[in-house]
Length: 435
Image (cartoon, rainbow, N blue to C red; front, top):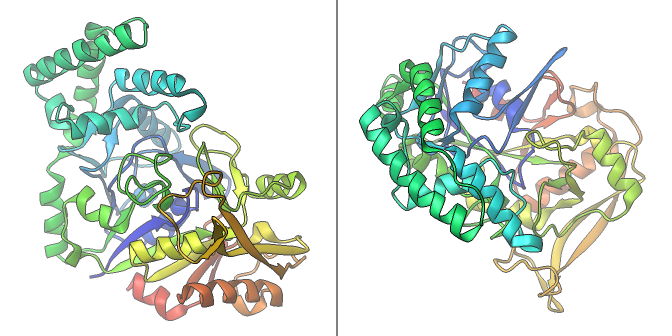
């Protein structure tokens, strides 16, 4: 049976939650493989809207087994709140499981995240202060606390004691702030251990057994390629691998298990937080129109997103790194009403034209500029259309231009936030992914 991997191709917020929800219907398992509660996937079903931060988007379907994999870092308090919110709207959460190997975000991680951002001043990354970065730092330094540690009181006590003592040195000596309390953290997290203990599993074994039984598996990431720790706009990135390859590392499967690589891009670009954004729109009128129509506000922080024209240099780079086989364009409806649409086709850096996404994408230091072309826009509202042939001519020309530049066919177009606001452009690809 096919396995599908869904990744974002820009700076996140491309609509992965909606697409995962759509593809989950025909899946047996949905596996979240990286990130933490610093990102959110929005789901809209008729009059019900909610945001998932750690729970895989497949939870809407009672037949789907949802696994939070080893590559995810888990804030137990945030996850418990998420569980209770889902239960309050009548969603069965009995099929959500957590990997023993997943690392835990502790209160001192959030504190250190916040203090470090403050100390960086204008050079700050623009994090959500959720403590995700410091959790991954502990993981890499081999001092992290995993879910399996939380379930062993003695081991948890000793690991927490070491970490609190060490972190308090940083908090008090470097940042000159009040220390965190070992006892309050220990008591709080022991209660989380009781709450989650029946959901903690050896996810690697479970996932491999599912493959052996030829189950349909969907891998869901958070953030997107341009926020990847290795291939994104470093240092303004997240702290995990957001690529299709990250699905292997973050869930414990070999590359041979993966089949369809589904990349999601908005019809334009957005970014939350600091960092280079080559195609950022500076025209306040156009910016506010796109932001308002697209509801471009962060799912986790509600911060207004920076908005920009579609960057085909960056998008081609993302498709290349991820080995994308199937492309999805979302929020095409947001561009309706514009007289023209700009689209970036190459860069000019240090007075030389370049046709690739550079590792040193410093807009000021390298004098990087975008070279745009203008395509005519369309006035019609397309949010009700579900047949590609019924789209306005200029709208179809916009999609064709993207496909031609990327040498990649778009098989699905989203024209709204609801489940059914989709246009299946390539029926054969759609069938392949769902078969």
